Amino acid sequence: MDKRKTIFPVSYYHGKVENNDRLKGQLLPHINSKKDRLFVPEGWTTTKIITSIDDDRVNEFLFDCKELKEQYIDVIESFCDDKYIIEIDEIWFNYYIDGEYQEQHNHLDSAMEVRTKGEKRACTFSCIHFLCYDKEVHSPVVFKDPISLIRSHSFEFASHKHDEGHKPDISEGDMIMFPSYLEHEVKAGRPTPDNPRITISFNLNLFWMGE
Image (cartoon, rainbow, N blue to C red; front, side, top):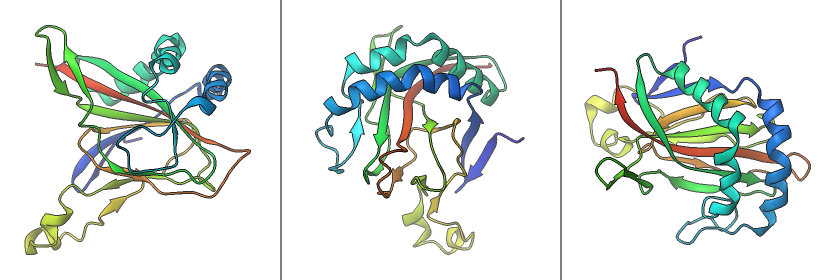
């Protein structure tokens, strides 16, 4: 299976977390016990989402889950074709159950401290793990063409006939990694009270790869 997918043209990476069912057993009790105390972060356009992005006490459990980290490392290693140094900046979950949505956004406003120099810089890649996902009922993530406005005024680019949006074909347990500048959104879905859409997202900073 070719894990590298090219769109717009922009590359993203699509893999699978092998022991997703076991991770669900470990993580869902924690997620379900914390979700009702969460609020929409200040500055977000959406008025309806359950997310732990601003709650470090909730997300500490995800950082400390040894098996989760091991599974993610395995998937990331399948994306990389050389030695690398990469570090997780932040990790959080999003919980969709009653028509929640998230507006078009990127992750460039997330910055981590580079420990060797004490400086801040934007993250390199972002990842989404589809912990609980039913493609028949849940809304997909949609990537947006980063040069759609250029295409609208360019005969050369317009001739490529690219769509402005791309919906990856996602199944439960899949994980995707994409450049943090790539705009994406989740449209409002129908209520699924007995079948929540739960994703775990995290940002990565690539310090070094190969030579």
